[in-house]
Length: 429
Image (tube, rainbow, N blue to C red):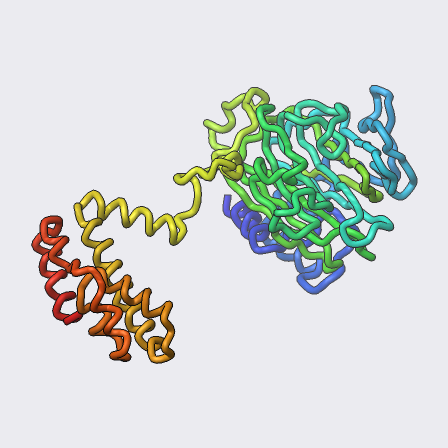
């Protein structure tokens, strides 16, 4: 048990993350000899670390050069369809041509509860800036070899999808493309290309994987309800975290696959390898008693993916609490407490005082229009404008103002409002 815990510690702190499954180690860090010596001290725990050893690689679910076992025969391990083309160096899902779709699917269902898939891929083409598309999708789904509108595969799928999207269809999006996102579906959700899948996305990250001069890799790890996506796009032989979410429930018995599609814009979408590793993880007796082939794909998430939908009606409750909404809520509160009338009076009088001071400064410029405005403000008190005006000449205008004063409001004010009125009267006298 202690050895297993130590193995888990090694993985969590990055020793097992150095791109297992590839030939050699190309960067700083502990060499294989030191790592092996350390593992020997732990005893037979070496088999519990996903380090690319052959005992963890599930060849029946892996696509590796030379690409034997690919074709339409029932004895082969991988099937392909559409525009997919097999070469000695890569599997090209789509060429750099418009309106192409292609996919490749594992022939055998996977019954591992804990696994990790490493994908060596390449997306490249002649298009510049945003003149390219659309991207690659990696699948773990109930159905396979079903063409459709979602990167060359079917919509309303059952299972897991990882989208490597290279083209922003939604001009209002704040994402930076290329973009990697995750979606879990039980068949009830539809992927919306026009919004780049934002409504059904669980998590995502920006990843600059297109037209790189070196190898690009992606790792998808699923273990005990935790889904992690990592990338190695900088040729450093080190994984970089992209997505990490918990509460994911995926059944066993689904199929691994990859697909790609092009529309008016295009790219070459190549898969060089897909390697599946089994993770040696202990489960509780309750977890072992579950029939994992019968569960539905789901996510125990605090926020439903549908909460990402923009509300076109401007729903007040679903939007952010902006300053304008805070102001409206404050007015409603004051109305409920019976203070709204007094607040409006206060704002009116203070606004009038401020306007009077400003306009008083301008009265010295002999502006008749401003004098008339001051006369209007004087309607609230016969001495209102005259007391604030610095130019005595405009006092003649204010003498003709209506004789209305604050006594008009006496019957509408609470004791607190009466006190406020008297304070304002003193200030204006």
